[in-house]
Length: 176
Ligand SMILES: Cc1cc2nc3c(=O)[nH]c(=O)nc-3n(C[C@H](O)[C@H](O)[C@H](O)COP(=O)(O)O)c2cc1C
Image 1 (cartoon, rainbow, N blue to C red):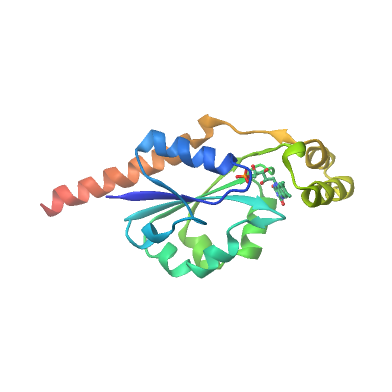
Image 2 (tube, protein in one colour; image 1 turned 90 degrees about the vertical axis):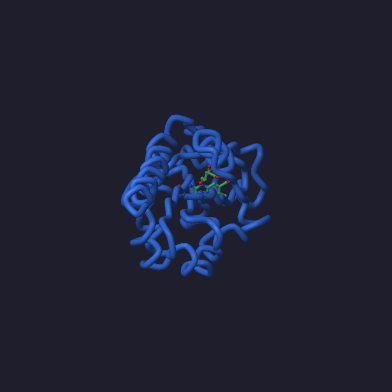
């Protein structure tokens, strides 16, 4: 069974996670802004996407490719400042088709934000959002940045990929 890892990124943390999953599984990686043709050719899909302004950066690409994404097993990992939470799930529910969310197995990973690497517009927006945020920890992080990138957190995703491959091998054994 051939899987492939697709990702979107602006500042590299989602690409790092995608590359670590690739190292652990041997699957190929594709930046969706450069090449997404393998989407219809692989047997299962791993899709990594950062959260920007309360929605997945690739939300419109995901809406456009809903049929292809729902046609085979889909492991969807988000990379965000927010930890796994109802808040994060609410952002996904507000920006992605319900069918896609029901079909996908979602894993929430945490990323990094380095203020001096941001475009001035993003920096300004985050300062405004940070000052207004009633969750003061999240508000401070929006202004001062954070680094929650953790290579170990890919482990449940790697295990899920291994389980998909094992189930496929068992199915083939029975059929053969
Ligand atoms: C302009 C901007 C907006 C962001 N908006 C959110 C957000 O709404 N919710 C959240 O949890 N994290 C937010 N983040 C944090 C990103 O999800 C985090 O930095 C992630 O690691 C970025 O992924 P990337 O390095 O692959 O681009 C934002 C970061 C930036 C720079």
